[in-house]
Length: 260
Image 1 (tube, rainbow, N blue to C red):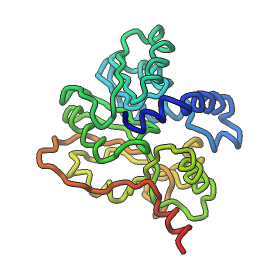
Image 2 (cartoon, rainbow, N blue to C red; image 1 turned 90 degrees about the vertical axis):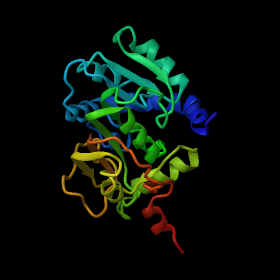
Image 3 (cartoon, rainbow, N blue to C red; image 1 turned 180 degrees about the vertical axis):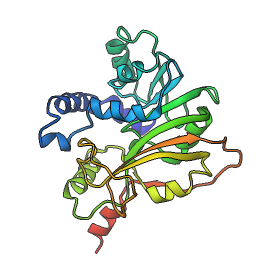
Image 4 (spheres, rainbow, N blue to C red; image 1 turned 45 degrees about the horizontal axis):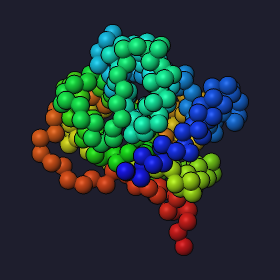
C-alpha cells in the first residue's frame, strides 16, 4: 500500500470532516481564514471551467465528497475518484442517493486507468499538494480531451517570510505526517507547453487565509502562498519529458527561514 493511502484512510478522515463543518459554519469569522476552503470557494472555482451540461467531469481527489453535488449541478456525468477507499465509501453512502448518476473509483491520481481522451474537464481542488505533481499532470493530460480544461489549486514554494501562519501550517503538517508538496509555480508555468497545456486563467493568493476570503491577484507576485490555475489541453504529450522537479516537500521559504 502507498503510504499516502494509509494516511488518508485513517486519522485524517475524521479530522477533515470536522474541519469542513467548522469552516462552513464560520465563513465570516477570523478563525475561518485558518481553516479549509468553504463550499462557496469551491463553487466559485468550478464556475471558471465553463462546464456545459452533462460533459464528462473527473473530480480528482474527491475526499469524502463535498464537491460532488456542486459539480453535479453542472453535469450529471461526474466521476469521483480518491486514493482512499474509506473516503470513497463515505462519499457513496452520503451523496449517491442525492446524485445517483455519479460514478466512484478508488485510484491514485497519477494512474487512474481511465481511457485516454475521456474527460472534458478535471477538477483538482485542494488536492495537488498531496500528489506527485508532474506524474499527476501527465495523467491529467492523458485522460483529457484536446480542448478540455483542468482546474488545479495548490501551494507555492516561494511564500512570504513574514507569513507566520503559512510557516506554522507547513511545520504542523509535516509533524502530522501530512503529505505536502510545494509547487515551484514559475517553473510549472514555464513548462506548460511541454506538458501539453496552455494557461486560461490564474489567481494568486499572497497570504495564508486569502483563498477563503477570495482575495487574489491576477498578476503573479514575487511571493505568494496559494494559487489557482485553469489550464486547457492543447496536445498530447508524445515525447517523454523527463524529471522536471516541479515540487518539493520543503518550501523554499521554510529553507530560507531555517538556514544556518
